[in-house]
Length: 415
Image 1 (cartoon, rainbow, N blue to C red):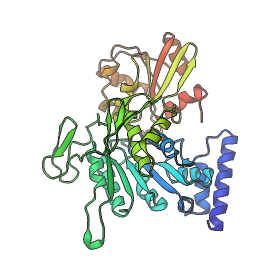
Image 2 (image 1 turned 60 degrees about the vertical axis):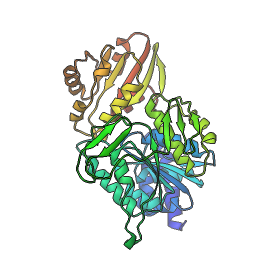
Image 3 (image 1 turned 90 degrees about the horizontal axis):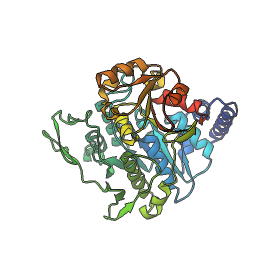
Image 4 (image 1 turned 180 degrees about the vertical axis):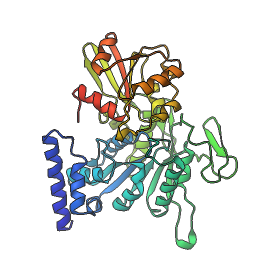
């Protein structure tokens, strides 16, 4: 690297270490921020010489990144932003901290994918899903798909691993060829993990006609856009690879959605030449992802933490949660988005019949939503009150981002 980049990288590592030592966080943002101030091209310099995978989407990025890093780890050391700092500052900090590694797997905020593609020149990009998120500051789903599509047109050499079940992702991953300008569509490997949330993909992004569905299939009623044949498929408790071989996947993470994340991770690793039979056993070593799915014993209660930040992820959280007392916590701080109207896009009916407690800065918004959904609940002021209000045994906790971090802090599970 140029001297300026070496200095910037060293300062980045030092700043991150000081932040951790001072108890101000894990340093995954401040180190990269300072490094990029010294050398705006630091991320590109740190990326040079590494085979890189980027993982982006509305939901599942952090878990899929962690699983992909474990799978690619078959080949050697892997740099990754394991705490979820998924903007260029976080990528820069992660690569600087890791030092020289042959591989990197980076989670990327969907808004920053084009910028990070340009800086890192990755070998493969995984596109997971697109759905509504943080309505007061996030782009509309169709706009995000357009941004992805435009970015891939400029990087046709990158290999793409994409979700065949999401019409928005399929459209974004298949920009048209332009032979006159020497533009060919990217090489795409399709995976299918099922898609339970359909409410953001009823209208074709190509022509505006209706998307129709039947079983696993979907198609546009007005143009040729339709579900491609997937190469990797979740089947029963395992994954079918492109050769038709079935691999049992034994995860310590709950829910069918994580089996889909595992299939994506195997597909990403395969783009680096990792055989599924070699990678699949490594997926089972992942027990918690930045505190998500962590189980903590406190005062006779086994507390499990689940993160849910938008309608699609709440739907999956209900699928993961056991039939047990459940605490819901909602904040509306800047990282969460200030608009809580999305709560009315979530069907809370699966919680009927269990003890439900609510807390958080916007607990009253949640109370109104649960009342409309005929879900009885009890409001508690603090997490300690919630623990005292439930009998010994399992307590499921489902919270959005800052509420999740608040509860982690109370459980002494800060990074």
